[in-house]
Image 1 (cartoon, one colour):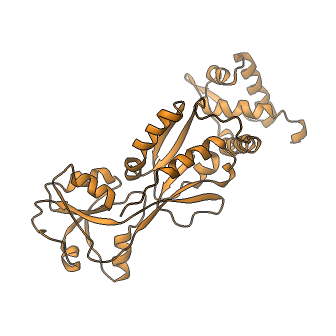
Image 2: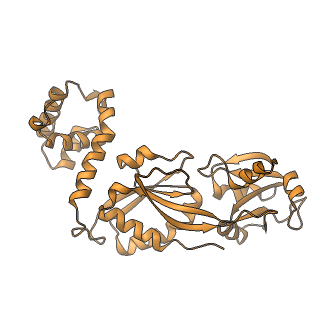
Image 3: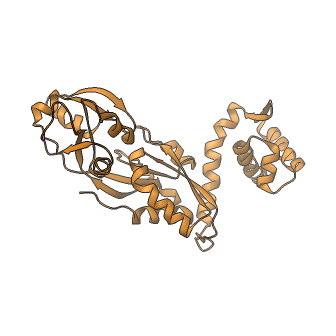
Length: 301
């Protein structure tokens, strides 16, 4: 295919069609008539020699060729928009956009109440959709623009992503106030004998188990959950203990009959980072959002 003979306007139509999977809604998004969008789709089908979107019931389903094109096409269009923007036309008070942010429920609890209050005051047209952070870095979703920001504890982040420190935390043991085996801070031997609840929280292995493994030790993990916020409720009234970030542990100790204890070994703090695509350094909306997140970083003891 000779790109010089290709109508690049068709790519924007294809991008919106793949998002909406409906000609009428795509026409509305593009401010075009429905026949104009249908004509553009027919031209795309002819040029690319593929049906691209096939009607199934009331929706149009993309073909394998269209699915393969979707992410790189969206990324290319977004990169063009970001590079052309110099930020002068971005006004938070007037902007209308939705950001996709991947975090654990712990980070959501730390950040979102204050961030949403700030958005309501300064940028009421900006919306946030939170997605659950998985143990594997969602690099493809960041590359394609499907995700805008990640916040968590990361290792081996590719150089094509921008990273900035956000918050540092220590850890505390959390147990029921009337735990049958605990009346004071446990030593290492007692810690290992306890029944543990582990919060995976976007990790394949936590700091506690990493340290124990290095010492040739292990603990008895009888329950694993990805949810930090549920963990404190699960240990109440049980013989389970869990290890939570200090700020979260202190928050729940004010609401629930819980006792907090220091770990019987020195781990030091862990560090949360904010990760975004380095290619979007000139995306004014994203950079404004990152500045707001940065200002709400805080530091836990």
